[in-house]
Image (cartoon, rainbow, N blue to C red; front, side, top):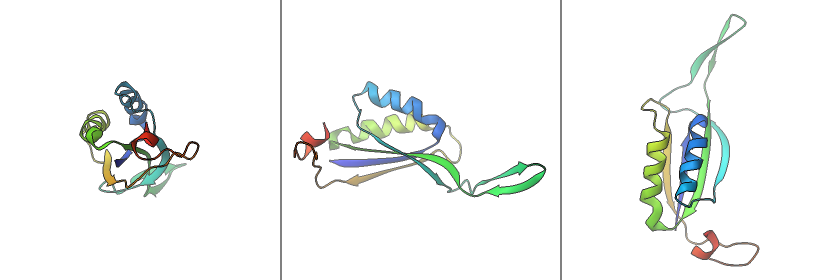
Length: 113
């Protein structure tokens, strides 16, 4: 099993959710996040006063899937969330040793289905 973490632009999430549902991925954890990378923030103006926004809003999408689905899901995330501009986000893939469903005690791939 693998855990896929994607940090994306908030406005890209609704379409990504639809695309993941189409291929049968329904189990997601979604968190609001803030961060910066190459974007390095942006300038804002409030009542004529300029200020710097160093952390930009992002969405962190996490899912645990069977290893054979990783490439397909990564491709969906890339094609759906890419705007071809700085700040589109990152995808991280991590190994998962085990998963256990609390309610039933099921473990392994049965716990993530």
